[in-house]
Length: 398
Image 1 (cartoon, rainbow, N blue to C red):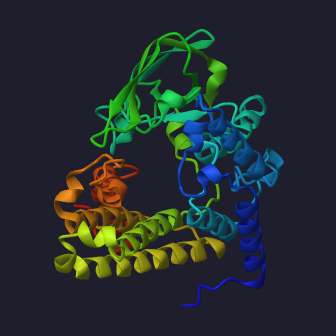
Image 2 (cartoon, rainbow, N blue to C red; image 1 turned 30 degrees about the vertical axis):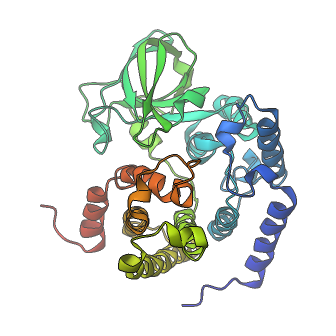
């Protein structure tokens, strides 16, 4: 199938490329740095880079490309969003705004009051306030609707008690959006409310969870008699499950995953033909075919991405197709990292990227450790296969 751009799409792609070339700070041009980290850094250069990049995107509404223009977004079509994300990924340019842009903003646009929109949306777009999600709990991950964090109404306030886990980057957050059970006697998908919580409110405690790569990305978050005003509830009481599942019309192609996987393979290929790579790849000969297989798989992933975006661009809503893409990409990322570690043999045991004995600055070693969670986060592989079997193939539940 021909996936080439139309004239209009090509014009927009060139516009995105021009902004990246002209405005992307040097700090980000090699894939280094993170906007989330840099905006709160004690390094003035990092703060300046984060500010300059967010300003460049904000001029065009590209901090929130999928938001409607009346709320400060760009109002891009799904195909334009796809092109934007593809070019950003190819340049390894960091996204801006975090989960406030990707998740909370769209939720407030659909379900928020005028007061909530006026208070929170501008601060999300400016980067003044960072939002993080409080959904998963120790006993409620894949079966999220079984969550037990309680919010009891007390006059004009809710009192929250409970624990959330895997709250990504909550240590950087200013606010959290939290699903709480407000009616314990209702069926589990009902009786849940969606609350906005100031992370600095008395009773909120964030504790780090260090993963096996040594990275601090996840946290566990505790709520002990945390009081929030009833005006912080988004949507109706006990209807928070449906609020939390809201999505605007943004693209779901996972093109960023396809681009990242191909970039990793390109880095591996370039390293293997270098003198250093030849000396640090004892497993190359026995795994050369595996590398070729991984390249084939990234081509398949690109086609999944283009298929999904073509559906959306024609007004269709991907269902099981998005599960196919997510499942394939998450398991492919694990296979790519595993192939790299096999190629490098014992050199893969070195995690420190600054160690002179490290192969490819330990990129694939750390990718392997980080990829373990890819088949769990955002819906386990088992859940994706169930969706494909029932919704895609029409098989009975069993």
